[in-house]
Amino acid sequence: MRYVTVPGHGGSGPEHWQTLWERELPATRFRPASWEEPDARDWADALSRAVSGGEGPVVLVAHSLGCLAAVSWLAERGPGEVVRALLVAVPDPSGPAFPASATAGGFRVVRRRLPVPVAVVVSENDPYATAGWTLDLAAGWGAEVRGIGAAGHMNEASGLGAWPAGRAMLHGIVQRAGREPDLVVPTGPYPESGD
Image (cartoon, rainbow, N blue to C red; front, side):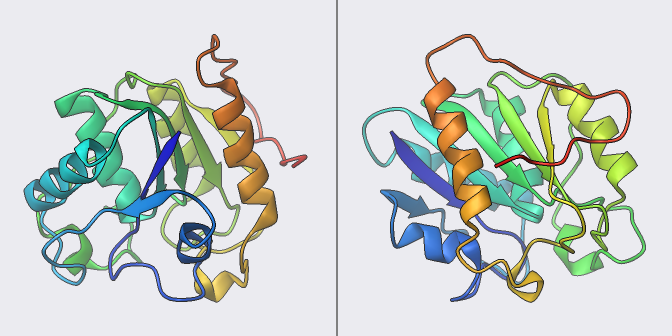
């Protein structure tokens, strides 16, 4: 199993859980031309290079704008070697707090079932998307949803560090790869993670 990390606008800093995970996993960070002035086409091409840059099945591990990039890529280009995706802190690009520079490059929100099983991690106080918006989007994707309470945008500022509970979620996703997915799409309040 290989992992491709897909950070969001600005990339993930040295204390971001994605960066910390990359030190422990056989992970490749996708490399777009610009983290600060993201372009949807460039990010899709960079993701294609990262996914095709090795052998074996791939799990995407995306955060923030990287989630929109990963989902668009899956919907437009097909899964290829990707067998699962973990999407953390999916942003609402039309929300008042999300920086316009992050979405000026043509990023869009895909609203259809995705070709691989996806787990979406949602925080109840994410400044870039309401939990309700995220739940609606996840339902359209056919995604499993994991709530982690009030964790902000689940980035360095959230103080998650290496985020062991997130690693446990990732481990569960990998364990289910190759088996029939047990997707859970809640209709009421999102579930708290037991991991």
